[in-house]
Length: 135
Image (tube, rainbow, N blue to C red; front, side, top):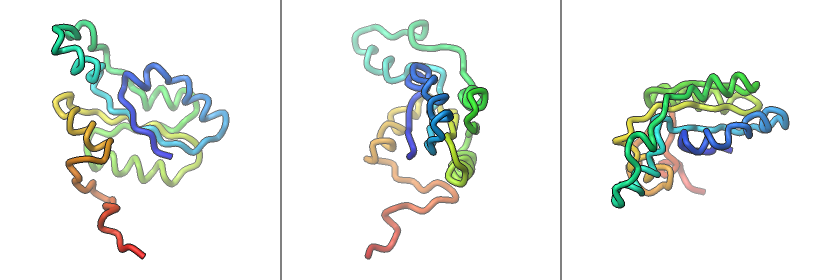
């Protein structure tokens, strides 16, 4: 299983990484880390709320936090890093947290990608599902 989440979401549920370790679950968590509650900011902006002081915080190293709880952890700053981290995670037992640094300006595109709706660009080292032969 591969789960995609933002840093705010993982920050609120981080203890579940320990649960996955204890239960030996093979789960991969990709966290989009921009050190902010970006979706909250996007939703609050039209109402004049959600200023930087309300939604920005110090960058958290989720890969290191995962390792501290007994999971595997990897950091990804580029598409190539992400592809390598995913390949490594798919080849191991137990949980892995991949801390993917993202530019907040890219957040709307990431939302579209995570929902499978737009920007279908290939990632180095992967094969697009729509390019596979059908049976």
